[in-house]
Amino acid sequence: MFRVTSLLTLVILAFLSNGCSTLGMTASKFRPAKGPQGVNMSITTAQGMLSGELIEVRDTGIVVLADQKLRFLPYTDIRYSKVDQYSSYGPISQRKAPKPDAKEQLRLLSRFPQGLTPELTRQLLDAYGQTELPGLKP
Picture 1: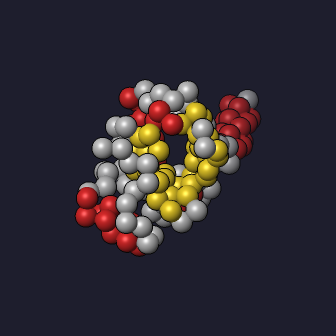
Picture 2: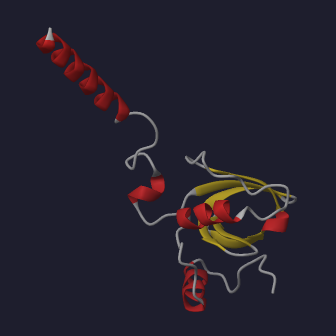
């Protein structure tokens, strides 16, 4: 009886461990885990919809790369947002900044979680043929 129970337990554990490896998001499926990119976001503003890579999270808004152009989107301009492949994120919506814990999660999913220095911002703008970050309010 003991051997049958032990064997049955081992079989069940083998099935469970095999099944768990295929459930949910894995690093091989999560785009930011494969390289330096940030997550992709779909964002709705009063001007329309755009989709792009999250570059940086700031206190007053986010920087995204959409259509090969860097853009600053103040939270007050964002009606709704969705992060691709990441359902645990509380979206930026209703023209309000996300709660601090959601903002921190979003920051960690960006390409530059440490933030952009002025020098790095200049290098990125130069790389995309821009002289300024559109939408940036002083």
